Image (cartoon, rainbow, N blue to C red; front, top):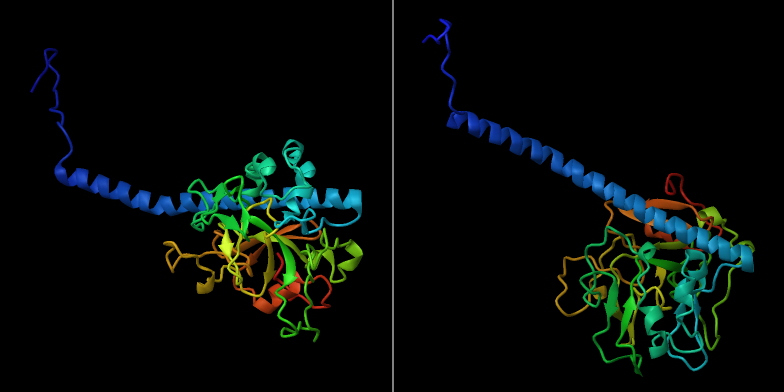
Length: 332
């Protein structure tokens, strides 16, 4: 076929054939299938870095407190006559740029009293792991607040409705105390409160404060905090409820005698939680990150512990003065 200038004009193709179109769609599908896991892995890597940075902020806050008071903060504090304890997190608020949150608390009143409602419900983003997925049923779908279903905690009316802002990072109070049943690698029985953030014993108003000199295992080999992502409120052996996942609640201390991300059926709450869902209990580090959990050591350094680390090694890291040796490569 010739055009009006005498040249030859080719007939253009109207469209792809069906086979060609299917081939193109298949190639695009394969590329997406190959790229999607890489994108998801990159996003999780970024979230894990953000989580580690959150813990670094906590480490700096602890050391700023240490510089001012020459001790780490007490793990718990309770007003006279109160039923519920405050967390060490309350002591760290000025060093987390949260002075306005601190002034919302009346520390002479129970942490669950109505006057402390605004303070207790204040969500602090740096205390939340961005990778959190599975949560206990008492934690709201937005993963920021805990709502207590029972009408009371330990028999005390919840005048603020039981709502508390969450944290995915808890303090470590040492290896789980089991009345002279667990020996450390050096042959000694682990005592109660053998960690860097202790709980109240007896009628004390404040838990024992730990100095650097008391951490004879070394600050670079002793856990200060760790991930316990997804915790809400749970019932203890005495049928009492505790806001273990609330940053202001003193129940947020863990004593370790289980491996990282271990799922204990006895730690599952009733109310519809699937038995194949990880739910952090009171004796473990728990993380949504693949392969392990972020931890904060007493020297303010942040490390990722693999979930293959043996329980005895975790107990040794949780102890401040057990004279244990930590195998090489555990802390990276």
